[in-house]
Length: 205
DNA sequence: TATTCGATGTGCT
DNA sequence: GCACATCGAATAC
Image (cartoon, rainbow, N blue to C red; front, side, top):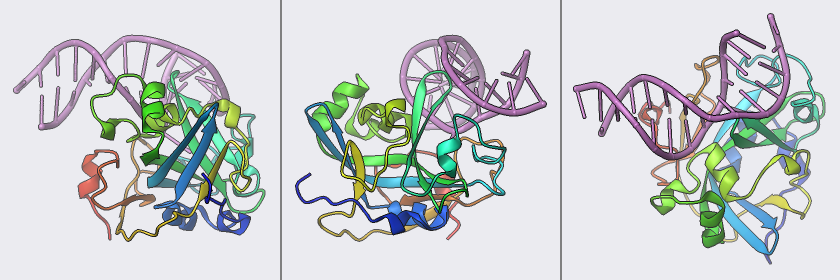
């Protein structure tokens, strides 16, 4: 917490593919009650409103997706399948409709609290290796809708305190029936907290 | 080990 | 009504 500083707004005012890629290895800092939770982003997906049929911003503005059309750095949380939340960060300037879905993170600090938010899990890798799982672990719900990750408040994103080297792998996105051919999923090679999926083997680069 | 399926709110047709 | 950026338990092999 102490030394973490939110990434500047200009980081998010770029296309969501670049932002998704560069969010890998960054740190999410989440303050909830007395808990400070931190985790490294290890897997993301990009959604592009203008031409991407899988994006929630593909059709038109609704109450649910309106924040995607705001400027970069805003938090987009949506509720899906009647049970789960997913955590997104808006990119680009106002009016575009791009966002990055955070699919998996690696817990750093506050692991015990994350376990408590998640309930019973078999091993540490299952705590945050999925978009709805990490929302449970970090206590993310619709009350964070519209928050700004460039402000040092309940949730923000920082560069890591120590730089780590890693390889980025690109694949197709997971869990879609439309827009499946776009290679907009990015993850850190060999990181055990990345979603287990057969697409992990269909490496494009 | 791999695949299927139920739970379930919200927005679109 | 139906599809959906999911999870995890149950079932099939």
